[in-house]
Image 1: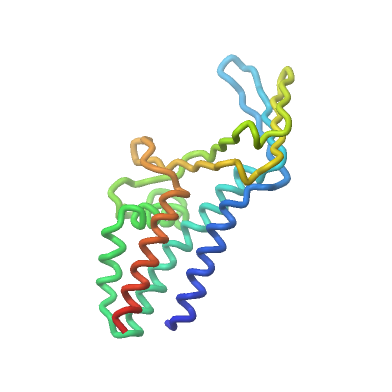
Image 2: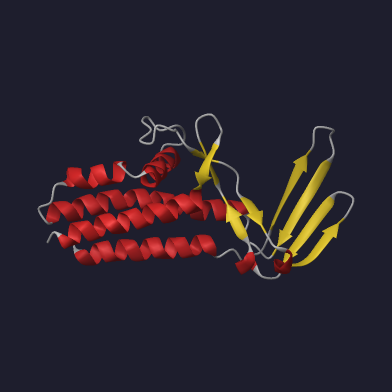
Length: 193
């Protein structure tokens, strides 16, 4: 594994982070039926669909976990102990949560082993839009429509839930912190050469 391949990996991670932050899109619609049988339609214009937002986050989580193999291979190519790379990753809460989430995504369900001990899973994407980001808000009998004029002001949240369903963090925040740890590990590998 070369320094250039590691640089490409971190460039990819950067692009994936940027993709999770780009929220402008064609819009999204969904229905919710309440316990009384009333169905309400929600329409958001000017944003990506919530599924697209979650797809971007999942792609980022998978590549964060793929970075493990890249860094271990780079350490090996430089004659470094790959167990030290593994140890550094296992000692970081955000990296192991991302690892568990990636394993759950890859194996469609609970991972065989939870590195974090939390058996985390992703919750539902939600958005926060300040009033200045909204150009129009419309209430009708069975529909609520929100038109977003400035998607850059909107924040998406993707809760990470533990085995019991308690929120333990946000996937976007966890991913950002995990990447910082991976960068530190990369730098430690390269400094030793």
